[in-house]
Image (spheres, helix red, strand yellow):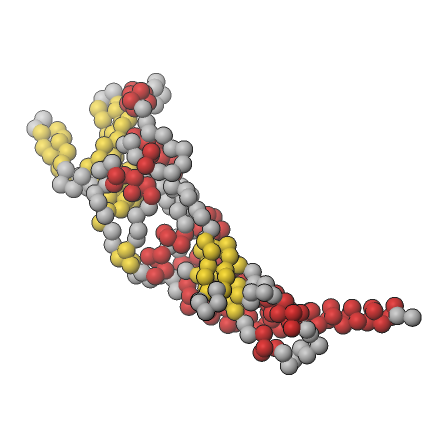
Length: 295
């Protein structure tokens, strides 16, 4: 999910003969960089159109890489901070290391949406799988009673609490601690204003017992997932906060390279001409100033 923007400096040699090769390359690099900036702006607008409430984190990870006179290649992509050209090899991107358990690189979590295919497990899902809470190869989606943030995602605080409760937090990098037995007991007891609660995992095929109004007992299947059990004076309430589903294949929703190529082709020629004209005007002004100050 990276797109390289390049230009051939020799295409402008005849039109701007007054330039040295170095000045010409610098002007072309400026045009490429301005193109990358505008392509990024257009593609950020596309994120709002294609996806449902993309987070500021996702938008920030769509970055641009400026070109230089020594390297006439700019770029637009997720989680990148540089682009280099090795002799005899295709363009390489340098990636910005992102190591947050709950905010993995957009280049990973958007891959299935942009390229199609199965969604990869998130770090939190891998952690739950390691403690045998999540079935191998499955993924987690917010349950009906999950806490949802402003962007339609499950609350990071709730995810952290679930991982901590099941001793899965220590499987993540960062300062996440598992819940101690004392803390679990405190959560279970509750307070005068807040009911006690705990979590349990329903695995595929699990059933839950209940009492009918007639007094007879029965059972019903639970969807695989994590449930919050809240304790009240007159009984308990069980609510799904995280549901486990088998990973599915996604159809491509966002033609990243196609859109970037279309935007760059539309923008690049004008941006290079603009940069060339500005550089030429600057050069002529310098010469005129020098001539005016000559004895």
